[in-house]
Length: 200
Image (tube, rainbow, N blue to C red; front, side, top):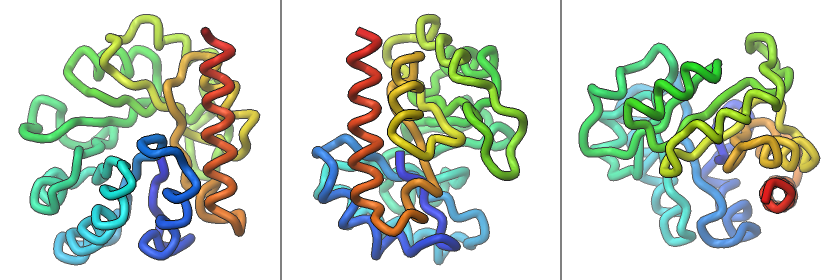
């Protein structure tokens, strides 16, 4: 999951290279731009969809179910203090959670994707949970994807997260700040694939 942050890089400019370097369907995009009002956010989401959909990448909108619906996004991603899962209709639902118990509760409430973290230290976030928390995967419904987030800044951590239980990883800085986003994302995907192989 590549999470956008316009303060770091223009997602419309950067996404084509990222998606071209990834196997079809291996990347999803979460548009997370908390400072944008509805109109500009809608325009950005539509621009991202125009790039992502031909590449087989799903597009999620952080927090704004109204914009996700209006723009034709694939889903809405709810922050922990956002709308309740039961309040959303007509969209796939992802959510962020910060403990194994809350992740399990969200999955049972109908979330199809749960981002759990921070797994490793990351600026401005609570104390890291550590990769061991990802063992919650065994208790989640098979239809719920568990996504590790937080401090996943290199392929070795992506591999460790997947081996511990994550189905995927979510990144912001690793996608946009290294100078070669396409290479960085391709390496992270390879790390996840290796971790899933380790787990099997």
